[in-house]
Length: 192
Picture 1 (cartoon, rainbow, N blue to C red):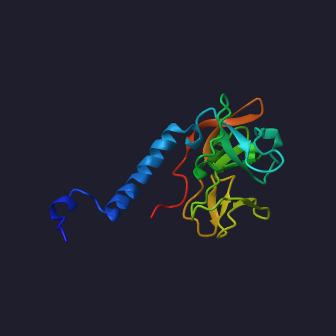
Picture 2: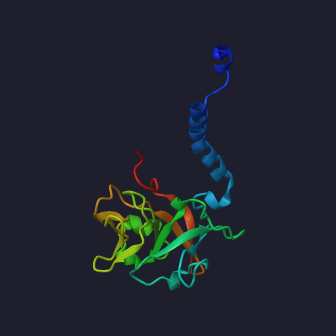
Picture 3: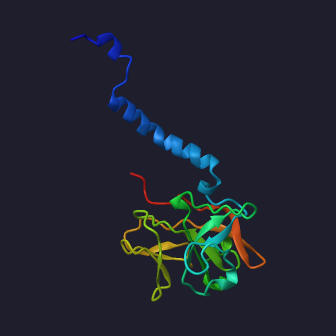
């Protein structure tokens, strides 16, 4: 049997190759996300499209949102190209409409005509915030029961979530809410 002592040092083993590939995966994902318009986070000027239901893919109008909730799930959409930014699960959003007088001052400042937008990704374990607790007027995560107050910056009012849902700054033009600024904090669950 021939010794590969000299040449084996130059040829990486299977584990080394797999390890290098896994190490590059986050970098590669970030590089793809940076060039893929569908994977970009919400950008100033983006509108919102319904995620599900009979209006799926249509632009959300403020007047179509029920006053006082419940929320609708949405994805940002680039207005000129029509690209829906659904390339990242972190782009899931929830929109709801309230009387502006019912919103606390900070929430009202980030809202557009009483319409609020929050990340739809629970800060506990990243499940979608897809339900409405009508008795509390709260956004509700069906995975572990976290509840958020949409009139008070999506502060946690129940369940295991460690922090509020980040809000997205909005403005409104001709009854169409659009992104006016970035998220108020990091989207998604705590990183381990």
